[in-house]
Length: 110
Image 1 (cartoon, one colour):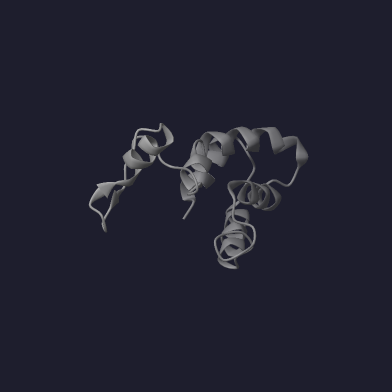
Image 2: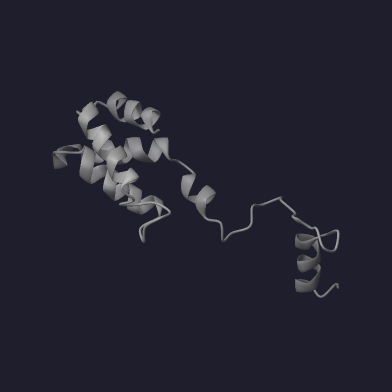
């Protein structure tokens, strides 16, 4: 889990050891951040990872760039409150597409 993230940080010339990577995994297993805790956003994970893995503030910029490159677009994928563009869900009870009907109602067409 997250081994590619670890290698991305190492490729960015960050002095991160296997021990720091394992500490991050232990924190995730202990639900410091994640679905079973109050902290469950990409920002919460970012702060945990930076706290655990970066030992000198002179590396914060490198970490930020590597983190952003690795997790680009993840926040949009994990926001389940927003509708995915171009995806119409079928309402199994009515056999209709819910997105199309709701759009017609908003436009005053139905």
